[in-house]
Amino acid sequence: MAETMVLPVDGAEIAYDVYGPLPPADGRPVLLMFGQPMDASGFRALAARFPDRTVVAYDPRGLGRSTRSDGRTDNTPQTQAEDLHALITALGTGPVDAFGSSGGGVTGLQLVTAHPEDVVTLVAHEPPINGVLPDAAAADRASKQFREAYQAKGWGHGMAGFMALGSWQGEFTDEYFAQPAPDPAMFGMPTEDDGSRDDPLLSNSSLAVIDYELDVDALAAAPTRVVIAVGEETGDTYTARTGHGTAKALGQEATIFPSHHGGFLDGEFGWPGKPDEFAAKLREVLDGG
Image (cartoon, rainbow, N blue to C red; front, side, top):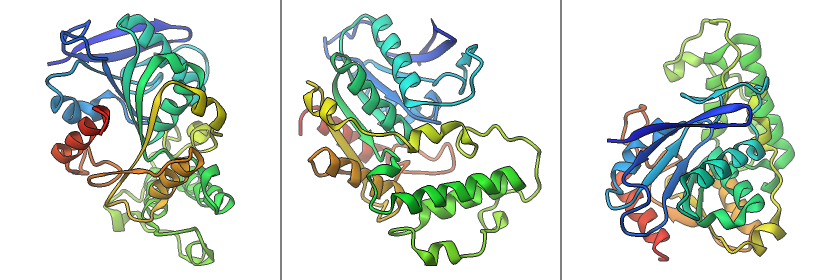
């Protein structure tokens, strides 16, 4: 069972779950897990597969149980990285190992850029950064399409557009943009509009994630070991391509992990992965394999 704690920071209160003793009983670094927009609940299955490690998973400000009082609604890697830096400092156990999923991978890259002393090894799993793609302008256009569908017609239409983007193989060509707008019913999603426009994935609040610009020089100079991971089942879809593109920008090959973009999930969120195999690979990578 995890112990839930709350850390006050500038403009927010950050909720986080601690699995295991602090400081870690074996002297190994805390294993910090984080996503964006996924909160700590998405890492329960993965944390359970590291019973020998002290694991900490957090809710980014304004998401899950974490509140914000800064008057903002945007989710930026810079702000989230500073929150993680404050959390690592508050843990008081020294530099951590880190696993960042999706937008959390972008946050992790910013954390290493701004605070390289905080992280021993960062595994950034399929970070969605448009600028590393050869078709970056088309990726921006494709992203704009599903956000516009969300604003015009609501959650189901926006999410259907997001899923169409996420499942497209290869670059975003004229063929992609010639497709009719996807029907939410095809994905089992509602077609009616509930009127809300604050979804962190579909609104403009997380644009700073996909618009993030890598500081290659800072990452190269950091003492942190940075590993970019891509799921073997992600194929040639958007997040696989951004993962490979990020790895290439950093002068490395992406490390292949089992399953897909949500490969560490056990089905609790309707997207089953291969958490046992995923955890084994993560353990291998963190141990230097």
